[in-house]
Image 1: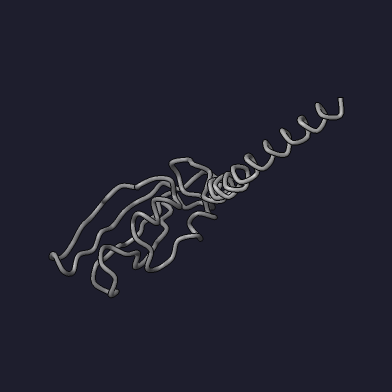
Image 2: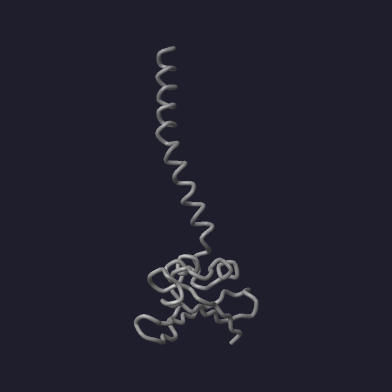
Length: 122
């Protein structure tokens, strides 16, 4: 009887030892998903405040959960501006349209980076 209890306890310890690292690694991923946004295709005020100058378009897409719509592109290959429009979520004040200007020339990092952002009521 004592041998059987000991076997059960050792089995439980082995299960806990194997599952503990899995639980510890899964928790940060779940937290990051929750913190990353609401996964709607519109932009909340919190998401809007979470993007800043120097972020890439991919970084902004990760925060906003949408790629937005390219509305304008100006310049040549070494000095180009992209204007990307996003839809604001209901409850984000009375701003209906959000626009971000990405460019590839004001910074030393490669690729397009956020330069400015504007909000429009129309």
